[in-house]
Figure 1 (cartoon, rainbow, N blue to C red):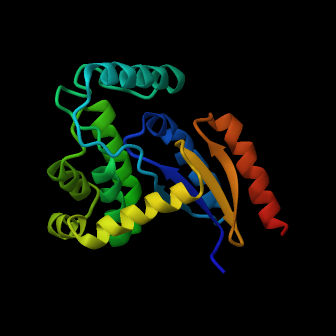
Figure 2: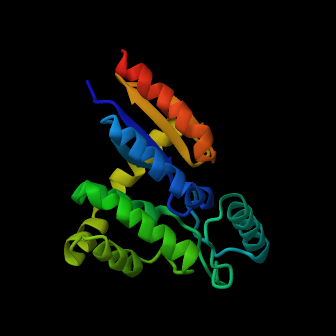
Figure 3: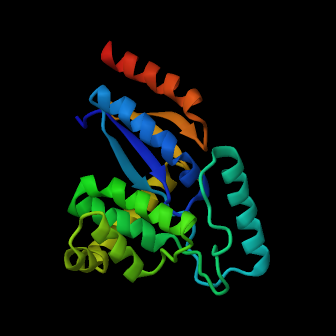
Length: 211
């Protein structure tokens, strides 16, 4: 039987997931105090091959402004989504799947670095060289990460995450699931503040303790 866990279903290039970052960190600490780990599942928000057109850029930046207003998370609007940018989130997702396979503890610092680079610094985290640099900053040896990131196994593992999420019918991020005895409970599908979610998680942890 799989041990109890929380599953954070997200995409590092999802703006509401960036807004949710402080919330999920607090929830992870709450769960960890009860001996329940948080594990990352990558959702695959966008698989694009063409550059953003001006209308799409305006639409996405309006979402970012809403996240900034609701959560206070910082965005670099001046350098965001430059002309010619292809909004493909698979490489950033694959970087996290790669990190998860090499050193699971490095996933969380790498996630934070990718989100900060994309949203707060305006960097292009679809580029392998940027992801390799960030992985090294997260503590993963550059050569080891680069080889694993480019492997067929990493691509297949990333696709498996995307398929698992799709098969569950999850279409919005962030999503937080609690798993006990192989059964999944939905804590949230979409952004909610900590004051709404901490009591929900607390009740689930309490029920678990008395099960």
